[in-house]
Amino acid sequence: MSERSFAKEPGASGALEEGLARWAALRERDRFHDECGVFGVHGHAEAAHLTYLGLYALQHRGQESCGIASSSGGEHTLHRAMGLVADNFSDKVLRGLQGRHAIGHVRYSTAGGSHLRNAQPFCASIDEGPVALAHNGNLVNAQAIRRELEGRGSILTSTSDSEVIVHLLARSRERTPEDRLIDALSRVKGAYSLLMLTDDALVAARDVYGFRPLVLGRLGKAWVLSSETCALDLIGAEYVRDVEPGEVVVIRRGRLRSLWPFPSAPRGAFCVFEHIYFARPDSNLAGHNVYLFRKELGRVLAREHPVAADMVVPVLDSGNAAALGYAEESGIPYETALIRNQYVKRTFIEPSQSVRDFRVKVKHNASRGLFEGKRVVLVEDSIVRGTTLLKLVGLIRSAGAREVHVRVSSPPNTGPCHYGIDTPTREELIAHRHSVEEIRAILGCDTLGYLSLAGLRRTAEQLKHGICDACFSDEYPIPAEYRGEIPQLSLFRPVVEIVGEDTDPSD
Ligand code: SF4
Image (tube, rainbow, N blue to C red; front, side):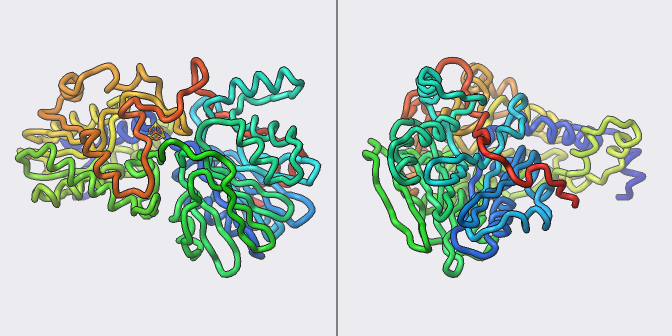
């Protein structure tokens, strides 16, 4: 098929292309979003470069801002910027981040929270020297502590929940940075997987429930900490183990000490959405490969909701592994009949008419004819608002499909997250307002089948720790202690001079 004939041809495939462009734009809004990723290196001559690579691998956990702080023993150097890791760290910037220890952070934000002052790591100065912190998670009692701190004279200029950790740390009367951190963390409730860089130590801490992941690795004699194992793989580091829920790891002069300063949680609460959607499929989290877990969910889904069909089609890329599992279990052929085209996505948001016209010339004919007269099982990992699937079902029908059966490899999303994931309000979640049959009617599909909560829980028994599934079950491990909007998008603010922040990466 030539570009020209494709551009001129009207009908179902043209509608498919146009719709896919809209789908790409809508899709970002119709997802849960992870808030952050953290990465740290202790004891390597190229600590900042390795951290840069680590953040590169964790970019899916946050694309709004990024930052690296390094320690050369006496002082910290920090570079933070808005945007992607690859666009903001030139050789010159990385050479300026000197020292054998470094931590880094990538952050996601929704509209309104998009400010450099919210980028991490956050640097502060305490009696024992400089500290930098990078945090993934959300605190549920931050507002109460914030009011208390302000009542005692602290000036908090951001709306950050994480900022309270720094103020608590600075006010602590403990004598070492790690003891100050433990003192501060003993006051907070909620989710944290965080890294703290001092002049000579790298400290890692994970909340007692273990909501967010944090893994420990080794690269030669250097120690590495990361949100996910995919970042260890990129730099050639060996996975050692997970930082356990409630554990504080202190690495100083190459030696690792493990502390258990907090009372145990009544149960583990590892975010099961990490395995369903957030984490990269090539990561191993909570003792299990993410891709294989998703595939298993697809198998369970096929057993719970079988249907006679001609093809199983994933919603790219989130439904890939579950669709493969569904296809293998059901014996129905797997087809990547919907192909996302990045050029279509880009041109769709360009304002210029000449560029928009390019959209119709973009090749998008891989699925031409595939849907005609077919019974399709469309597999997605979750439904948030339903806008994406609404479009896709319409597209597939307009491309000639006889039947469209939607299968979802997680239970209905009925509640928001309080533990570090950006979610819509409860009212915006389609499964909160509608029954499965009503959602089916809204989407316009022939049948709709969600994975059951029991099926999800049975599959998750293979994970090392207990899971949080509160956004499906409404069983929140820790009650939220705030009213109104979740203040989880504003993070640390700098309180010491930042070196290199204004450096132009293109230098
Ligand atoms: Fe993960 Fe949902 Fe629990 Fe939040 S509420 S931690 S998204 S499982």
